[in-house]
Length: 370
Image 1 (tube, rainbow, N blue to C red):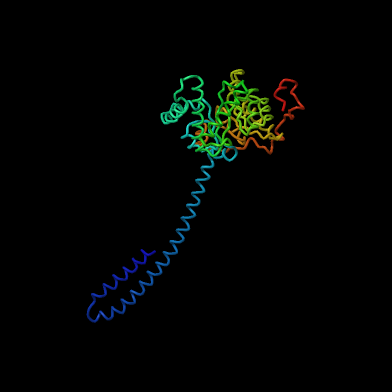
Image 2: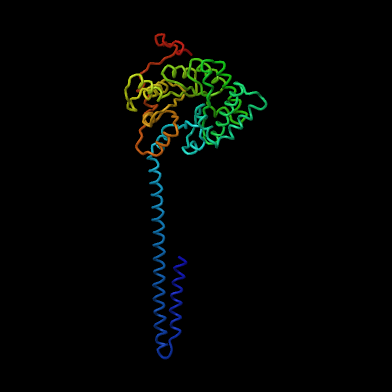
């Protein structure tokens, strides 16, 4: 508005300057008429200025509304993408050791395993972390299997610590799978991993120790949970493994969806729709059983082969997803419906309660004890 006033003042100044060149008798007449003309023009200019001021306010108001609508539109558009919708129903976990991908997809938690760490360690940008692990554990020692194992443990913890700088929740670090049938060795390795994290300044309440769901692994988890060490029981393929894990009060289980599908496809030669896949149905059954009978163990679907499996498990406590499928979900639109709902589990679950009072006809006696 100051600009408009300046222009008006300049216009009046020019009119007054023109009149200074009038001479003679006409000067007096024109002087009076000029004054009137100038006054009228000045009045009109003032009115125009006031009108422009109102218009400017209206324009600003309109622009503000337009920006708000555009912003809201952007939010709605972003919300239409499948990953954004999924995050409202389920805790999304990144199944990778690649820091850049974790930053990109912004999951709550992250899971790692030796194969994922191997893939990440082959990237030049992580060379310094490998060097750090080797320097820390090798020192003047001879290279033996034990030293190599120590280096691998240290590397897993270094990666886990870096990941925890990115995610707000948990990171899962795996116990050597070769110890899956040795309860004592699994417990010892888990304690060692927690000790390494503590030395790195990480509290144990942000760590999930990943253990295979063998009978020995479940017993190791039972011991560790009593010590306040949270466990993620992996390599879980059936309902009775899940039942044993719940009775051991483990923090979380990772039932495999894709690997169950692989077995069925190979055995039957059939193709399955995502909603009919045996792996999807297995996780659904476990989830509904846990919720109906009040088990506190979280269910985290894992090992996905396609995004359809993920969509058909929307609502599960957690889903750990590979970067490729996270990318697909982040860039594809479509309505996602909540498939698993704890409020409906009582109705959906068809299984009777199993425990000391029911031993499944002796087929899983060991699994059904507290």
